[in-house]
Structures are given as C-alpha cells and as structure tokens.
Image (cartoon, rainbow, N blue to C red; front, side):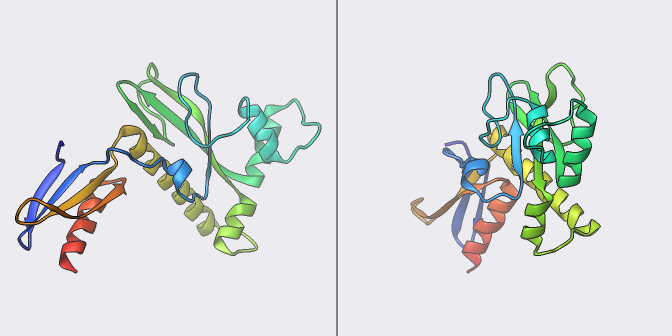
Length: 192
C-alpha cells in the first residue's frame, strides 16, 4: 500500500497511509451546519428535498404558505434567521469544495450553501442571544466542517499503522482528515 509518511520512533515504525474506506463526515459525524448542494452528477452534502435555492431560502425565511415573489426580500429574511455561507465546487480531475470560490470559472461554480439556524446556534452555545463573537465562532465551525468535507472529497483521509520489529502491525487508527493530525496521534500513542 502507498505510504504517505514513514518514521521510526522508540524502535517502532509509524506508517501513514491513505484511508481505504474513509467515513463521509456529513453522514457519520455530528455537525452544527446543514450542507445543501445541487449538482447534476454528484450527491454532495446532506440529503434534502429542496429543488433549488429559492425553496431553501423560503424555508429558512420561515414562510410556510405564501412567500413573496421578491427573492431579495426572501434572502434578507432568511439571513435574519440563519448564518448562511455559499459553497463552491471545483470539478477537474477530482473534486474540491470551499466557501470562498475558485479562480477558474470554467471548472468551478457555486453548488449550494452551508448554514446553521440562529435557533440551533443559540442551542449549541447555550445562549439566549448570539453575540458577534458567537456568530464568528459559528462561521468558523461551518468553514471547518466544509474543510473536513473537502478532505473527504479530495481523498485526503488517512490512518496510521504502528509496526514492531517484525513489521507486524501492533496498533492502527483511521479516519484522520489531515496527515498532521494523524502523525500527531500516532506519535502520542507511542509516547504513552
């Protein structure tokens, strides 16, 4: 199997290798945000039934029956009820996603949104009101969730194996979204 990194520590060998069966963080992890995407070829983000962004914004705005035809008014009301970030996808020999966009308009574009309702954010932070610092913290969490999902899309998940003298695996762990976190954990296992 292809090794990303190998080192010896305390007479043991640490191998960092790609995770052959990475978990989908949108399915197997608890998340603060909800990731809604529309793409003709890929099922991205969280499962949903919104046909388009207008239906999503109508729901976030809290309209149950009649919504105005003015999309700008709907978006303004939705932004009063939720923290919403755009999601961009770059699709060229693989997929990568972020909240800032990409410089290549031919192979990239907006694919959806990641959001947290203010009600859910207040519950998460045990607050009656969201301060500006709490809002920034929520935005940071949403961006971190996108970064973790991006690592999944790019195939960057990895794990470690610790091997003894005879190259027999004596410990292993999988599901790291960054090689740095994986290596730190492997070293801490050997230090214990």
